[in-house]
Image 1 (spheres, helix red, strand yellow):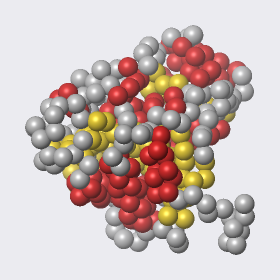
Image 2 (cartoon, rainbow, N blue to C red):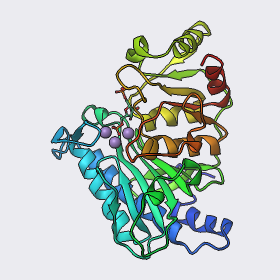
Image 3 (cartoon, rainbow, N blue to C red):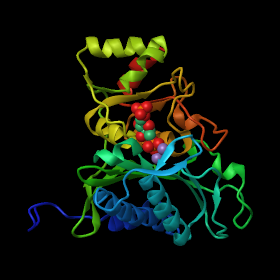
Image 4 (cartoon, rainbow, N blue to C red):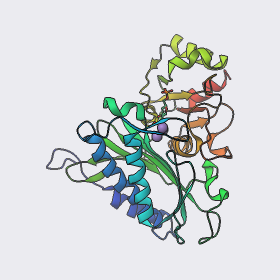
Amino acid sequence: DISPLGYTVGVTLDRFIKDKQADFPFATGELSQLLRDIALASKIVAREIGRAGLSHVTGAFGHTNVQGEEQQKLDVVANIRFTRALTKGGEVCAVVSEEENEVIDLQNKTGKYVVAIDPLDGSSNIDVNVSIGTIFSIYRRVTPQGSPISEQDVLQKGSQQVAAGYVLYGSSTMLVYTTGIGVNGFTYERSLGEFFLSHPAIQAPVTGDIFTINDGLTPSVGLGIVEFLNACKRKGRTSRYIGSLVADFHRNLLKGGIYLYPSSTKNPSGKIRLLYEANALAFLAEQAGGMATDGRRRILDIQPESLHQRTPLFIGSRELVEELHTHL
Ligand code: AHG
Ligand code: MN
Ligand code: MN
Ligand code: MN
């Protein structure tokens, strides 16, 4: 249906979340509220990003994070915005963030949920006005409410996620999420201040033509990866690499393709972080009919051992990931 504005503005994210609560008969509405908190913070971050070139939030912050990466100002701004929204919301008891060395125990005795977040993904692209993102995973805490947060609460397998998603700050801002019953995407209408359902029930193409890797890595990756990449080239497939995981993943999810971040001599465990990058996208990929592995195991089956642990990541269209596996 075409609206008077010349485009469809139908179901808002708030409405959709509320309607979907009926899928969970015993739901109390706290997860719904948590998703709304994340959406609100993402609107604030989208606003900061939209004027980054004018408001002096480009460039380095002057600190190095626990990964040894130079934090960008927007990494810090986004981290503050999201952790503040999660703290004030009241549904969350603990946050794991790329930009924090340790778990943040929010001391919120009634909070049922644990959130792992990459507040700003693709920071090398901030200063050049290229798509960046936010990635989040939501878990139910396993220890009793009111007790101190323990390792068991934060080091849960990806298969335990109750919801996950990302925000893509691209040529438009989108929020894509799953609660384990398919994947839905929403586009932000800036002048109305609302996300609207634009990509219902996203299905990843079973195969595709796109392969996505930082080609500079190839001299120092395993032979199997090189063989697979050569096969892609022989088959005339297309190479696309943005350097923001969210944007690279989103494109391949819609168009069909495979994203590879293998281990290399420089990064023996790969670069992508399991808790707040790989798990969320793996959950989304599987919910959309795609696949995600570390080359041997399903990403969602990996038992995390530390907060900032890295993993090789191969994710996207099922047939392409399976084809890669024949070379490994
Ligand atoms: P972040 O900006 O959150 O630290 O993540 C950066 C990650 C990911 O977004 C991207 O896919 C990858 O790093 C790019 O790595 P290369 O620069 O090695 O290609
Ligand atoms: Mn970083
Ligand atoms: Mn990232
Ligand atoms: Mn980041």
